[in-house]
Length: 436
Ligand code: CMC
Image (tube, rainbow, N blue to C red; front, side, top):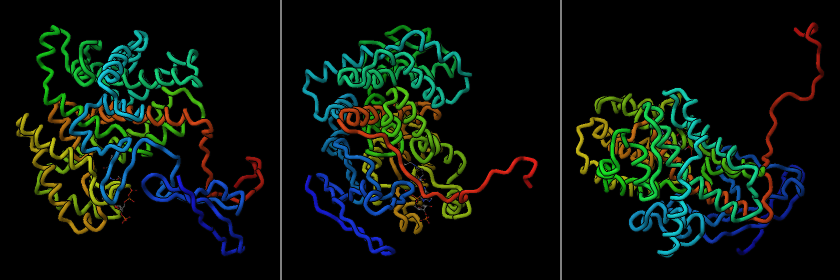
């Protein structure tokens, strides 16, 4: 990493100081302002972290202008076409693609950890049947910390590796259990003879009365392929809100399962991972193609809180490369599962309208990955309230990779931002009887 400097001058006082300009392998040069307060008595103000790099990372690179997304240097397009989700998870966690042998061992280890402790399985019955699956995910994943805490030595890289593996392995089991609980069926146990995505589909859709042979028959290869692809596209996205939340919580040395639960909470919001569910809700609200102009008008109205869900991105300003890939799959999946669902036609019409609209063109608002992911999940018969849970399964690979990276740094510090205080100046307490 080469180093230049940047001078910052306070025009009010005339004071000036030099700061290192850090240059990564790719991307925008970054001013190291860690000593700004010490040298000039100033803080920086950047709500939403629009111009702030919160850490150094080797994992994922995004170029928002050019629509580039690299995992450990590999373009997302190549990984999406040629690899499996577990191979990508291995890559993210370990930095290199696995050999055949390493992938086999990794897959076996994941399979070994898919089972939940029987006491944890009991937690689901504490939730009402209509609890949102994301609420159950936050609770159950957080509860994993109660099962793996005392014996966890975070200084030991092997302990950290096993913790990361466990989270990746158990996430589909917990996700499917949330769904089975919501429809009143018993939890389906994971099977060692199935691959990651097949296992999830089996746990998600098996009926209590079915034999394994019947269950195997309903695992459709196109669904498995689509799921692998969606999971790869959602696996990591550098310092997004949920990953930053995981890093922030982890910086205190907190239990990793609790930190991942914090990440799940951050992902749930409709501006982030909750967008895929919000897209479907929005399409239902729009209802018909004739209503699209009315809703586009609402989306452009500053006094109306309505936003076009699945459009826009903080980083991508020309196109979201994940959306380009997923759009193709969307058509494949819809061709494989022919449907007369009017929402698909409506989604395609909405996309066409928005892409031609001056407001969306000028503000560089394009369909993001979650505009299409909800449509595919719906075609795959995944219920709408499970869409964001699907995102959780995939993003766990990214969260644990960032956690592993951070915990391996010898000098990681607690994250503790400062603020621009805008409250009262110091004032004196008055007893209640004297208050007006
Ligand atoms: N519909 C209408 N107007 C929009 C939209 C939208 N979806 N997104 C942004 N704008 C407008 C916004 O009002 C603002 O206008 P102005 O410049 O006049 O104030 C301008 O575009 C810039 O928007 P912003 O809110 O400052 O952008 P941001 O970077 O803070 O927010 C976003 C990014 C993704 C939260 C936002 O675009 C959004 O709310 N999109 C809809 C939700 C969504 O699809 N989220 C999923 C993101 S992809 C999955 C993931 O990675 O989590």
